[in-house]
Length: 309
Image 1 (spheres, rainbow, N blue to C red):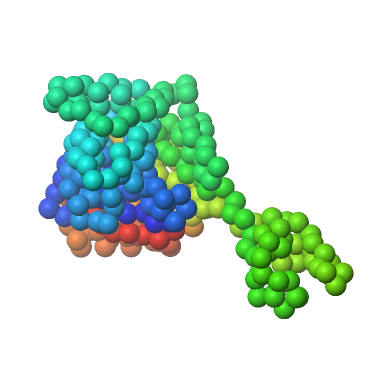
Image 2 (image 1 turned 60 degrees about the vertical axis):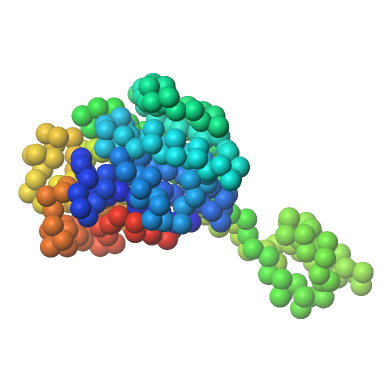
């Protein structure tokens, strides 16, 4: 499980940072990639990665500001050009209005897609659990931005315990169907009468990962709730230390506020993105140092960077 950042800038693209988009790569878990936001130029960034567009099965939009959605019609159209690959439907989750934006863009441009888009729109009154599969669930909660904006909490369900095959062989269990029964928690009796208790050979279930991906927001208790015990908390850092007033006026956070959220939530790691183009390389280093004084395990991400979860 990895996160790859396709765009880490705020508001407008710069030479070093494209606008917002990141990919949650779940290839080993479910052979899918989930995209979060799709700012202008996202498909160009994807060309610089190993991501195959048809593997992107779900797109989650945090809010309808242009730097988070203007790349969506282009990506959907280009995804249709993968003629040599199987065309698969795609699900788009986002605030009410995302369906109108996408369908209008495709209609006006005369774009025809060989796959279906399944829209899942929500507003302030229809949040909570928005997706559940056999391996993951996704929750959304409203944040505090200048327009309706959400954060997402992606929770992997607990993983099955692992089978100690070497220990089973030592106990005289022949490789074959008995291994499968024991893996499923079933006690067995060998031909010589030896009783094999599954609990002695299967480790306890392992807790799944928790990933929190927030849209644009002022510091808010909703961010803390979404980030509780998260393995990864992705939080915007449009502004730096001393910019609290301008951050609040524009509906954003500082690096200090993001670090406070991570600390209050008990997150394991904090990844800062949505960086203002006014910050140069030396400024970015300072953003990290200032935040680390509050929450040590912090990192300022850059475009195309991959982070293992």
